[in-house]
Image 1: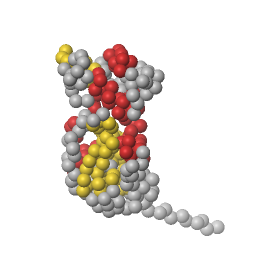
Image 2: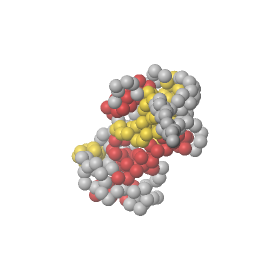
Image 3: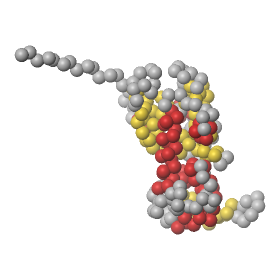
Image 4: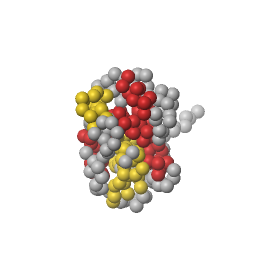
Length: 241
């Protein structure tokens, strides 16, 4: 009895790309960096900055290159980490493109300068995307939401909130970062007590900031601690107002 020979199909062509979820806090609100696409598909629509990985290029290097080329934001002022891989077959009309997303956090970053295939770049309040005022190309809203949840979780368990702060900063400055990222008002006294009890979270520099009104506020820099024990949770550890 003859056997049926099943020929293997050649593997589908895959292309690698990187996308960037870049958060900063401006005027007390969490913002994300968006570009206006200059090329098809989705020309003229809002999207996260990103692009294709070049031959022989490492993923982290591609992310930093795209950051510079499409926005003009210096990567040395940012915390940058891999977020997740996105590879659903229909995510990009140009073909099977797998994107490695990166999360970047920085303190009150400057206005970006668009370049290469982006016709514009601008900071956008995250709330305007979450409530549907702005729609994003491709699957970038999912990537943004995943990045937001990662940032919120990181603030609970690590000291990464200080990456949003220009040094030196006050405890009130740090609290405003938590409020902006979490979207929750926090009790100032409870928050201060929690921060000051966590060894290595912040370090006083022995100076004070003179406010327009009220008492001078102590100034701090980021400490050496990387994790928060116990965590600073969105509910429970810090009482809401």
